Image (cartoon, rainbow, N blue to C red):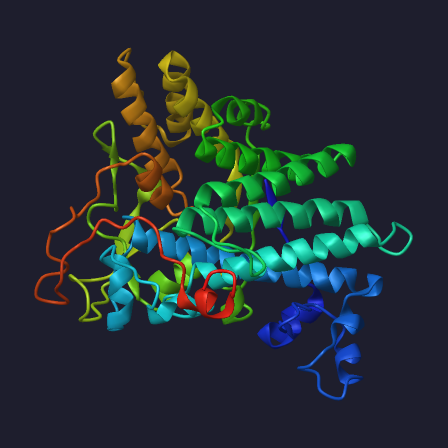
Length: 424
């Protein structure tokens, strides 16, 4: 299992204050002190080979925060979280009625309800920018240049995946409005670059992560044969995690922070302690925090998957690759995959020869195995799964009111339309 290490000793000591607009987290504090205004570093001072390590640290910190925000937001839009806070503008997401003008649409990743768009867009831009810089430099100028190109391309791919799965549309670099399918195609390009560079440099972990990411976005684009080829090539037991930190808020595990620290969101009754084969499934275990905010239907229930600010979060796993295979091929191979994933948890084995039943069980297995990993919301959308509570049902009656909607994606926020002349 691989964890992306997010920061240097300098970043651990300095915290979020070093995360500047140009993402120079981890840079030498002595260099900062040599500038007349440390908050206004010029690109020519930091986009140089000697700062390659600092630029990578900044990228990885940006990606960590964006990934956590994406998991949190899609959990609310989907069926994994329900709102328990007093911020009325936030309720639109939980009601499945998000609007482009919602105040949270341009929030950063550390807000109680972050934007899924702004942090992911920043991480994508920084990843592509760092990749371009590294490609313009030489191995003599930058140590581990090839490995850094592979990593930056990988994080660009996963950042684009965030945009494609959360948003109804997106835009890159002030360009035209893109559909999710077009965004997934961009992600595939980044994953392909990461895979090619990683294979040439014998970087097995990055190669495996790129295969998982590319299999995912190929599946989303309907390229089942390409997805199947990638998924079958992932090494058994592989996992790549990002590693949050309790050093400061920006580096927290955002699911933990919003659920067990801020109590802004609770695991609802329809998503907690799910059963498998009639038995409680430990992969979806929750507990009652005993905390009632007064703005939710009872006490806040906490997920047990991420128990602290520094709980690692997976971004690519062999188990997801196996479920992609199961979804595509069906039949007894899918049955075998389901049972192999259940075995470590001592859960009841599944048996069926009915293709419809097998397909439904693959979906149920994805919900449990990939719980709070950011994938459930887009599964609801792409597979046209039943929404619960159903559209038209009253939203938290006696507490907030209104009716549940049927939106499964977030409209392009006005921060993009106001600043992107191509879309106006």
